[in-house]
Each structure stands twice: as C-alpha cells, then as structure tokens.
Length: 100
Image (cartoon, rainbow, N blue to C red; front, side, top):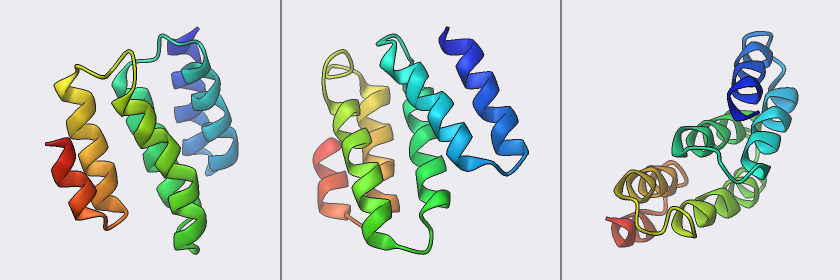
C-alpha cells in the first residue's frame, strides 16, 4: 500500500533513518501507483543521504528523475516540474530547462 509505505518512510525519516525511509519509498514506487510526491520525496531523501558525495548523489537521483519523465508521468506537468527541480538540485540547469 503506497500510503502506508509513505507514512512509514516519514516515520523513519523522523528517526533519522534515511536508508529505511528510502527503502519504504522505493517499495511504494515499485507498486506502480505512487504519485509524483512519493518520487519527489525519494529524491529529497537521496539528496540528504548522499550529501558527502556528489557522484553518489547523482547516481542515486538521476534514475528517479528519469522515472518522472516516463510513463505514466510523461504527460504530467507536475512530474515535469518535479524533474526540473531535481535537476536543479544536482546543478544541471540545462537539463532542468528541457523539462520546462
């Protein structure tokens, strides 16, 4: 259940257990019915979790941003804006501009 996984992730984040939060969000996404906000949340968690390594951060986040551009979000303005914001977090402004 997406909502239960999302809530569990927030609880784990509150306990400063980002790996567990990420795992819950990942399971929610694997259902195929997770809304854009869940994808955005996992990007935020990866950004914080990999703050010491820009390479690890980009490797973790880039596939999530690609997912926001793919089916079922390919026609979603919300998903495009979320992908652009994620690209800006990574400092990839040219890629962000393509999403908008």
